[in-house]
Image 1 (spheres, rainbow, N blue to C red):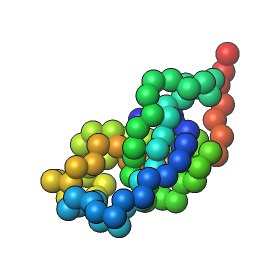
Image 2: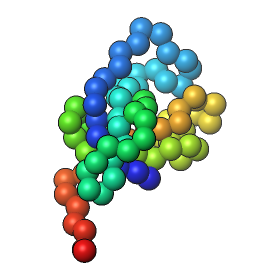
Image 3: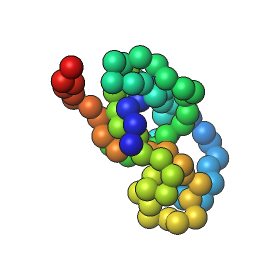
Image 4: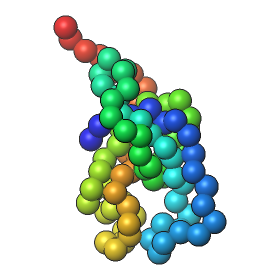
Length: 89
């Protein structure tokens, strides 16, 4: 899993089978210092994350399994909204 910031939403009128009724969000990975890292990407959201929120994202087959369809073209999914975290220096 990785930390990411929700940057925006994507709306589509047509989706592949297995993606119907799924909300799509643009997320930007961040490190634990909340600095942007890497490239933004699209993740499905079934838990109601919003723009600006810090979220946990899973990728690959764990994300695909969340839809219940092994053939769905999902490669990233938001699995948690971060309320807070603590680092020990």
